Length: 468
Image (cartoon, rainbow, N blue to C red; front, top):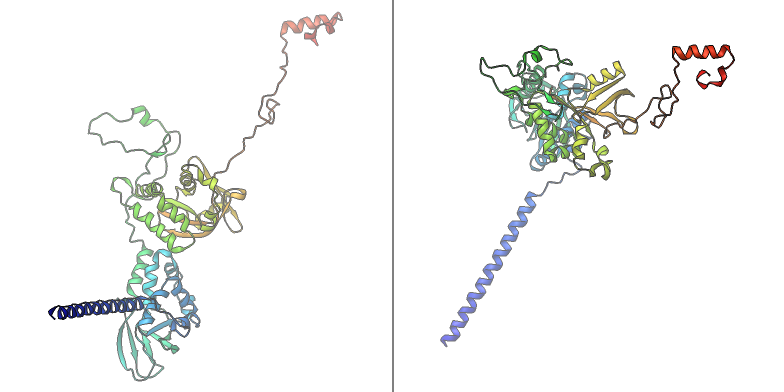
């Protein structure tokens, strides 16, 4: 009897344990499914305020939103709550805006300033143009730093935001947001300060330039500076060599300080322009090569830190895709190709175009010594190289900070192989370069001349070949 009761209790315990495990599994799976559904990306329907912004009359603002890569951020915001967009009219962005400030906003390196400017026009709450709102109200924008002050007297004709008049109240309304048209662009103080800092070059310290470091012509590497000498020690160079003029003029001072202070952070600047290439788009292959070829990026960083300036001719992705396996098979060929695209000068589109317009053809030194790259004017632009291996200046001034200049081109450049030509002068060489057989003309001395004259008087001149 006791054994039967014990068996029933044991079965009940097993059944309860099974039920407990089953409920735990179901509860865990429900939580996992809920977490997946909550973390999934919110889908935007065709009636969204973002779609209306892209299709509205505020096309200039819509283009800036796309260039600032804010669509995903706005989609996430719309999925959580309503938004209010204060959109300046197209004329305010085309004619009324300072051209230099617009260029500043469109530069890839100022992407954060553009994002801050645009997010300062958006409030993550819905504000309708109803007559029930009076006085001053402050609202925090999507930038999370700046606030907008909205003033209204209760009528549709007296609405303003940060002093800018709202010219078109409730221009576009959708279930998830509303767009109000304003008369001008709202510029936050931080963005204005960034623009003034760039324009006045405050970020570049005014330090007296030093001479450019010397390059050893045998190894093509930077010469190490001479160790400091104690006072009264003999000079490193002999007096005669120190006073004798050099074979050529000394190089001009570099536009950067360089020297032992290493004021410029070359590594940070190289990383900055590589990041700019990635944000610009269409130059991912070039950026990938610079990232993988760490020796090339390190050398560029060292040159900039030492005070050198560089102009990078960056082939776009279409040009890099045309490289064949034979061109990249030899060891070190990617480095040699990239060295041919680095010019140890600071050139912009304007300076290069003015040079080729004035001189017709300009030859720039490259880091692939001793090869040079030719530039000439063609079709209103600058063309590099020769014949089929030429490339045009496609995307000018992708990155310009005073020390590194990046110019996009639509082809990969290779050194021009000059054919050896032999000048046929006085028939001493044939066209194949082989020396031709030339019969030397016999010269007759005074004595032989006199003998031949005497033989000619007696009629025996023709019997001697020397006299013919």
